Image 1 (cartoon, helix red, strand yellow):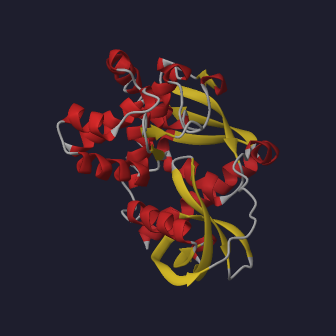
Image 2: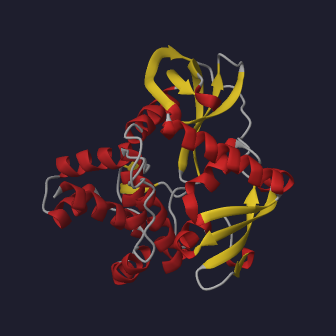
Amino acid sequence: MKVNRLVSMIMILLDKERIGAQELADLFEVSPRTIYRDIDAINMAGIPIRSISGVGGGFEIMQQYKIDQKVFTTADLSAIMMGLSSLAGMVRGDELVHALAKVKSFIPAERAKDIALKANQINIDLSSWMGNGNIQPYLEMIKTALQQSKLLSFEYIAHHGKKTARTAEPYQLVLKSNHWYLQGYCHKRNDFRLFRLSRMSNLQIQEETFTPRDYPKPTLDSADIFETMQTKIKIRIHQSVLDRVLDFCSYEDLSPDGDAYYIVRFPFIENEYHYDILLGFGDKCECLEPLHIRAEMKRRIHEIAALYEA
């Protein structure tokens, strides 16, 4: 099979300083012409091989590209394979397949089983259980636009459900807290923006290209900002929602209150998102303090009840 032969050829070239076309042809029982085609294919995959003519000539991988297999430990190779395999499951493309093949070419046969075992000890699945079916095709479209420096157009749902048409220069795909974002320069706002893919619709790659500009990396670590904005409120929860509450706080914030309840110091910001979190716990959660947040919860619950009574 050609793929197996190519991988084997890469491993031989990594191991040997130089080898002739006829020697490779005899080794794999193919013609020298086939070997030359295989060498071209390996070059196209990004592994630079040069041909030396004359006595003692042959094929060799350029020295500055060669990596000593002993540089990588079993743990190193396992970690690289784990990361590439996980990313390949979400962001598909030939470049990831080629990169994975290159990494595997560094693995000596006697270590292959041990490395495969360790690489499979952690499985990172970036796909969601359910949700927006556009995420995967949008990732592919954005990746293409990034590679070709082409503009993207789409409709975007911003805060409070406001829908706007946008045109943006794509610069970076970002995965944060299980959500994909596009870092791009928005022509409508004349500034860089971070767009959440799940809020996009009608995404199109435009024929128009753009000249990439220097761009700032998005601020992804918001711990300091949240630290100043958050406060701890006191809520009483039933044990049946404990697993969901622990998505937002830790065991140190809990204290038992009878056999089936807990008092929780819950991190809270007075905005729609956090009020919706509390409402999502239903009648298994009661806000105790502060009183003005308790009163606001009561008002919102009355509004919901009135909606159903009407």
